[in-house]
Length: 418
Image (cartoon, rainbow, N blue to C red; front, side, top):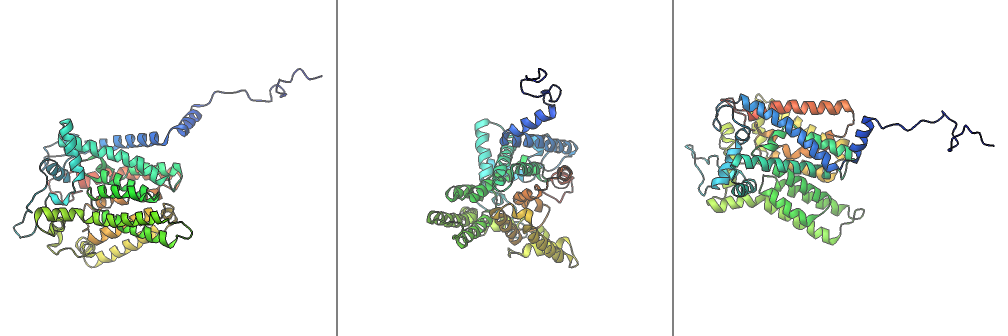
């Protein structure tokens, strides 16, 4: 006869645990796990914009009168200074048909240094909405910054776990230069088009890649670097075709995409030449910004960084430190953390770094110019220690404060444009 003290499950009274209400922490954990990835990215982005906007507003409150605004400007006016004025000019008046000439006989700074898609889109929305340039420009930049965050997660999640890819998005949103993503600059649009292009490259959608690289080539310089990365990608696929099939259709499409990217990289210089009648209109315009530093020396590949090293760090130490920096960067590109990002992201970063090393003169805008290597944040996101991650985000926010003060804020004697 069964013991009447036994329950219907056969377990003696007092030996089991009664069901309990889930704790708040458990409920939050479950809800977090069930939350779609894109909602998480949007929340991260929104929080980061609260932080960065607060930092910019705090600095705007301290801002004195300057060439672009009066004292204590509002957010939108403060967000449209520096190169934002060039984009404003382009959106309203377009590009000059005659290049300005300085008293020294060199080409002066002018709008041809800035590519047309970003100011063109801003202009179109200005006409539709009736809003002024600064408001529309900030909206466009911020929208593309969010789109980049979403696309960045998709890109890194191809090679990294979801949780790591999500923390990489955190680093992108709180990066030291993340204020540039919500001002009247084309950086966030370029970042989106770059991330989309990398995603299409990694997933081998070469035909769609042509369109995204074309848009990228008319947003900011970088298409030539992408053409180099794409060309090496094609060579690698050809070499590995026995273990990684490379069908004829993909061979043709990838070669066409590579050639197209190379042509796109020269398109804006060609347009400037046609409109102004000067074959060197674009390069002469770009060189105008470095003449105050090193004079009119023309464009000699790889010389600008040596010139800059000697200019900023005299007595022979500059080139030595530059060489050390290059060696350390190359070594970093072969670390396990970077290798886990995949070959194609590494090809882009290496190609872009080589491109910048060949043509750019290092100055205060160097960090902004190097922003397109932000996919490397996927390497910094891989360590999982909570203390490390909190510390990195805190350091990034502190560096935002420093960058805004040094590069964006105008102190009246400023020589550090962003």
